[in-house]
Length: 420
Image (cartoon, rainbow, N blue to C red; front, side, top):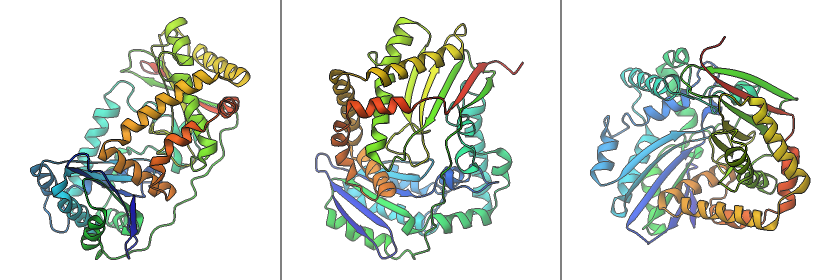
């Protein structure tokens, strides 16, 4: 792995992979839902859309036509703590991909027409994905206000319609100037490339973008809930009930303390042999689907503090949420008391390693993982160390993690139909 930092603060990480003639280029900005000010919910996601509406030297849609016309694909997404953009291209189009990303980092086309258009697009996306869909926003939008007390951690990152409609061009320009500075970004390149050539081209295309002050990250810390905090959400489109329960876990930056919880989620919920799947789906028939994961967005290695350990259960109408929660508590207590044997731990970690390696084997998956590790932990090299870190998790650590998941938690019940 090769790295450099340009004079304007842009961090560049490169990994050479000659297995196929493709290259992935990813740019990650250290801004996400948690960076939004009050009164501007959904602004980080709205701005992601604006970044595709033209730039210093490209008109609207030209970014798409340049990438797709050269046989590539592209996209972007907004998360709690970053917004990312990427291209997957034939390796001969590396310089084009770098030019395209540098051009919008240099200056995005902020016009009233673009802003109005993208507000409407985002509102329609919310209608399709949340308002008019069964289980829309469950639990990733609906649970944070139950688990957290601060606006930073609890607000709806998709956005409130009133907030979106009140966004101004001045807001957009200020957001760009503050968060889209080179020093607030990571450029990750993986594929059939010469690392030194990538660094040369990165300096050529990004190096003359003026440096700007990088905003200090806010203090997002807050205490965990005291006791159980419970809320009921009524979903008129849902055919059956569901429940989500979440506990706070150690800071993901402390991997030694954090990874046992990641393994614990797998032990409980991943695969037919997992504790909750075996009991609730196969034996008791008290659930129709079960999921467990770390982080609101579902990627355990893509999370900063504070973050939850979350279990989501969809269950038949004749089974109450209290029955579901009691079963979860019983299995956690059994793990805390009796632990797990070597074979169960080995089987779980082997499955996790295999899935992780499948995710980072493609050049795009590796470019994205490198960018997150560099952005959040200052070490893109961590991508290669994760399998070994998972192997190092012990039975005793998983058992101790289970013992911490007690009554200080958030519970969100989803009930079909309107409120009584």
